[in-house]
Length: 308
Image 1 (cartoon, one colour):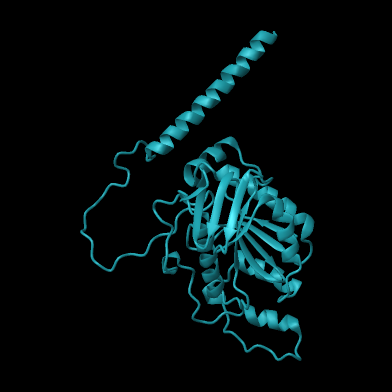
Image 2 (cartoon, rainbow, N blue to C red):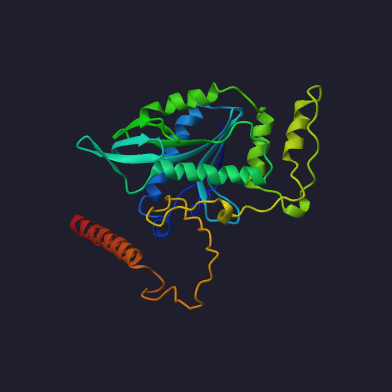
């Protein structure tokens, strides 16, 4: 299985330094690093099952937006958009609802993970349409919980829900899916997605060949986009991630659609009430991490002094 890692703030060896971790936590949220580690665990399991003809694109930022898709799994059977979470506890997924189960009673969770992965899938599907990718099977939304302490009851959820003990079965089902693409097409598609063609280099689409022609020429024909292709625009999705919902750890919020009614032309200082341009939450987190580092340094000094 080929892995294309587009994770931000990591070095060439795939490691994230302390300062990069602080920066990522301030930008993406408290769960950012934990979700990255959960992604590694899922990729490691899938890599043992899926071999040739499969590609995973990790933390891919859609062009002209700040929407980051955590995992994109491309194979002969189609495309899956995967959101990986390290949550634990009791939950239920019903339709488009994501509830926390407390004392046998389901209450809406503060963050609707089902809705989140569905929106990510919709955004990626839109990107595929703009790239003129022929999708006979729509991209599948998948939510994977990696912690064995997560128990999820599913009742026809809007996205496929996979718990930690079923990741291997998920990989096997992907492997056994009816193929619609050749392996060469899968690799070409992955390259086309991470390296989209500039509009001025795109050629008009050609007619699909007949069944008697070689399959490779069909793949090339699908990749030829129309002259009217437009770049991806997150504001045209028709939805936005809610303000009350924290953005995914590797995905900032997509901009909302603008209202057609004029707004008063009043200048608002975006940094008003902020120190060094940081919000109160970011300042508290930064100070907390600084204090922890100070304690670590002092503790190391005490140990060295006592051992002398």
